[in-house]
Image 1 (cartoon, rainbow, N blue to C red):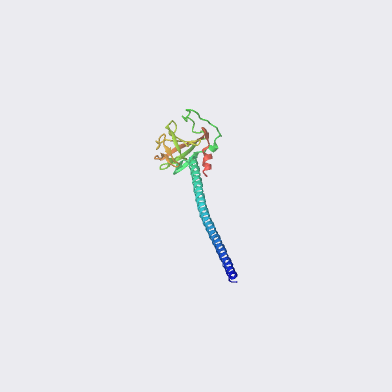
Image 2 (image 1 turned 60 degrees about the horizontal axis):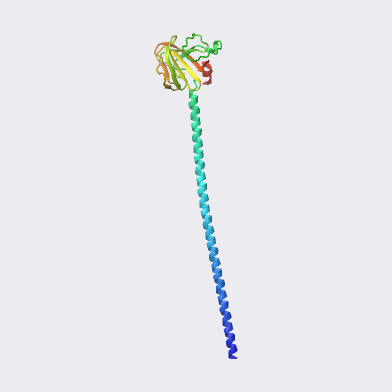
Length: 228
């Protein structure tokens, strides 16, 4: 009887032992799973944070690039506007006199002509009634000025008016100024619109003004009308 009880006790102890071991194993497995889940969650959060930071950096870089592109486009636009303004300043528009002046011959009243010059044909031994000669009476204190930016291509004596100044505006236009007093500029000089060519020191004088486009005389009043 005692042996039977001892065997039962041993069996019970063995069962309790294995139950305890299984419980411990179960707990260990759960702990490992929990730790793994926590690690995975942390890794995912870290990856998410890294991705978020990278996205923010990319967005910042894109914004910076967009700003640079906008600035570059603005710079190009300003350069183009400046070029257009500089090109416009070359057009010989307006009256070539600053100060008191009176137009005394009007090309509009003359017969339309189409006179072409070429080579060395620059003597200007034409008559005072050249249909495209604009004559302006100027008084003491007035200034004869360039009507557009350009380069002085000729300074010479003129048999009719005294002196001749030719300006190449480097856009197909040339202007010619013929007056009695000595020019204030020389061949090769770069001139700006409004710059003085002759200074009127006599009581009264006459300026003869011509415009050519592609070596062909045109009516100066056509350009004066363009200037408004």
